[in-house]
Structure formats: structure tokens, C-alpha cells
Image 1 (tube, rainbow, N blue to C red):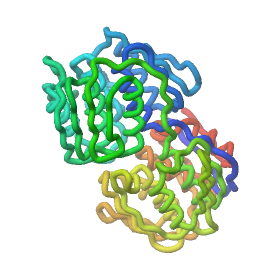
Image 2: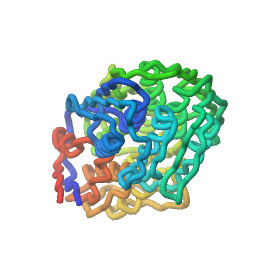
Image 3: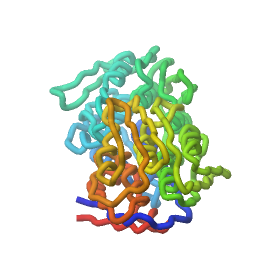
Length: 420
């Protein structure tokens, strides 16, 4: 059991370099299975989700080597295994992306049902629907794993997603990249990570058009080849450090940021009185003496991201006035509320809505990270609280934040990591 011990109230200042995007890295890493030869991925964060995925791929017979601190080499030969149904797979949500890449590369796949943070129902039906329309026979075996096989090869099709699922969009796009003919995927997810995956595939020889819009068109090719690709910066890590600056009234410079990926976050942060200035790949964030209350509702991109909702909740606990937060994506995304209440926050939950009445101060307490972004919210709150906060279940935070204790210490935070 690992934990963070944070003594709040320090004046934070300095620079933070943002790592490569977690949600982009796991998708592109999975997509490298489609490529013959060696793929070199740069700006890859060594977070636990990435390490677990790479370890799974090693067990499939794929050669993995870290060639630099944030660069990994991936070589998938023709004799790779198409079955990943062992326990480690079910601990990781991103493991579902192995379905599209293995199906495209080997014509069949068997992957354990994915795990990850418990945010509510995240069914695989849209993934299976897409593979089926591409010509694969799919099914769930004993509620343990998903099996898919295209005995006659994958064929292009017109696929409509009932919901713009990020994972389903990525999975179908990967399989379609090497299917025969054209695939049209409608009502797709439009997140920056989707665009990054499409750019990687195109650099490897795929023909993907429309990523970032409502419709993606994929002209299948016979094979993809390994290439060098740099993962985009993590917009959620950037947003998390924006919330740290805002809630502590500090001034931080964030390096390696694409501000266009953060438009809804920047807009809402500015409503709280936080000053934000963008200059190239740098962002300067200055928190006010007292935050203003704000109302948000999470939506699919380009709406306000659900992955930033808990951090905004942490900010709202100390804002002047009452904030209203509506969660439209995940029904179990409000887990930060109970833990923030232990620190003195005034939060009432009614279904998918949180009413947050700002208080003058938070106090240290022993709290627990129940999911990745809830953990990030607790870190931000702890830095602003009076006294010492112990955040348990740190391994959850490690899933998406690389060297968070070191980064916070470097900007003046009183932060200690304890690994037991």
C-alpha cells in the first residue's frame, strides 16, 4: 500500500513539464501491433497503465525495449499470440484496445474483459458491434473474455456508433485500417487522442480521414509498417496542474502543452478568476486569492471533459459561492465528494449533480483515492488544506501521473511518498 503525505499551505511556484498523454499512449501502443517492423514511440509516460500494457504485449511475443527514459521500441513479428486472457489483462481498461489491433493483425483475438477504475457501466457492445459489421464473429465467453475471429478476412462497412465512445472508435479504426475496402464510422469520438491515433496509423501507411470530426473514413491497406511517432501532451495532466495552481493561489508555468486541447477547461478556469496565458507550448497559470463559484456539466469532446470534473470539484470546495457540477458521462464519477467532505468540504450529491458550497478553508485528513481523477482532486485539495493530508491507495494515481510527488516537490510542495 503506497500513500502520499502532503502538508498544505506552501506557496507553489516554478515550472512543470507535462508528460505524454496516457489515453493516447495506450491506444498508439496497442496500434503498434498492426505494424510490421519496429515502431519507436517517444514522449511515452512510464505510468503503471503503460507498463502493464507493455508487459501484456511481451507475453504475446512482442519485443519491447525502453530505448530512452520516455521512448519505447515495439517490434511485432508474425508469430505473435492472439490470446490475452490472463488475469493481468483484466486489471487494465486499455487492454480492450488489443482486440482491434490483434484482430487486424492476426485475424482473431481473445482478450479478457477489461478492468480499470470503477466509474460505472462501460460496456463493450459498441466494440463488438463494429467488429461484427467488419465481418468478424464475436462473443463473450463465460463472462471472462471476448473472442473475435474473421475467418474470411475483415471487410469494410458503414458503422454507426450509438454513443461516441472513445474506445470503440479507436478499436474499430485500428481493425478497419487493414480491412478490405472502405469503412465509414459515424458518430465517432472526436477527442485529441483519436486524432493522434489516426496520425500514427497514417504515418504507418494507413488511409484514415476525418479524425476529429463526426465521421471517420478508412480505406483499408494490406499492411502497416513500423515508424517513429511522438505522443501528444497529456491535456488532463495539464488540467490537473492548472487546478493545483488555481486552488492554491499559486503561479505555475506548464511546459509541453497544446492549449487548443484545453479550451473548455481554460474557459471554466477563467470563470473562477484564474488567470491563464498561453505562449506557444507554454502555459502560465495564476490562481486568485479566492476562487469564484462556477457551474459545469461534463460532455463528450469538445465539451468539458469528465476526467477534469473531480479536479474542478476540489477547486469549488474553496470558491466563494455555490457551484453546481453535473456529470453526464459516468454515473460513479462523484467519488471524490465523500473524501473531500472529510477535509471539511460542503458537498451534497443528488443523482448526477453535485452542489458544492465553498468554505473558507479545508483541513488535513486521511483520505483514499477511489479512482484516478478523484485521486488527482485529493492531491489538489491537500496542497491547499491546512495541516497534513494522507492520501491512501496511491497506486490508483500512479495509473495516470508519472512522478507526481517529485513534480510537486520541485515546485515547492511539502510532499512525501511512502511505498509499503
